[in-house]
Amino acid sequence: MSLAGEVLIDPLEARAPVGGGQRRRGVGRRLTLRLGARARRQQSDQRESEASASCVGAAKIHVCTMPSKSTVRKAKHDMAVGKRPSTAAGEFVREEIEHIRQGKHGARSSKQAIAIGLSEARRAGVPLKPPAPGRTSSRTRRSATLAYEEGQGRRKPRAPSGRRGRATERALRREGQTAASSRSLAAQAQDAASRRSGASRSAAAKRAAATKGARGRSMAAKRAAATRKRNRG
Image 1: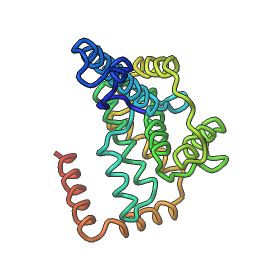
Image 2: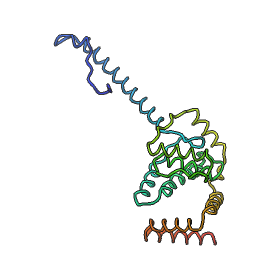
Image 3: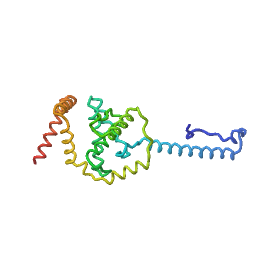
Image 4: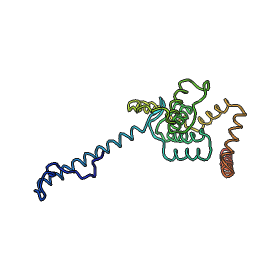
């Protein structure tokens, strides 16, 4: 229970008769100020510890940073309008790409940068299921499963470790920023698309067109036309 702001009575002052001396009342006031300051320090320490505990690092490749409020808001909007979890998770991937471009940390490859964003999304509560068996390594699938279960409240998050977080951050800071370049991201997108069938790509495009709406499709077409014109020049 917090002691800040409460009126505390000194035992000596409580036993004093009405109209007692100024000395005892002065002792009570000093005791109240000391206890109030101590309580405020305790509250400040507790808030700092809660803030540090809320930043839980993902296994191996995650920098211990909370996603921005705007990213969480965009992801919630995507889910609210009926878009798929992969679209909502893309907001977290976009934020990680921007972090790399700004020099906050690096990544060994575009695939690792995307994995960081997907792990952030799963831990933030985006219902993006782990990859199916056989589509990736067992280690990656296990990491994605743990992040998914933590985000859905099925597993208690691992206690944060300052040493592990600092080691992970130092490792990523040693990596370069080429993973966030347009050329690297385009190569990663082409490689991922080549592993999907034509029917799968067509179904994904139809789902995206259905959730955009007429206005969204018009804006996307204008952006695409502007990009084509810029690349030709």
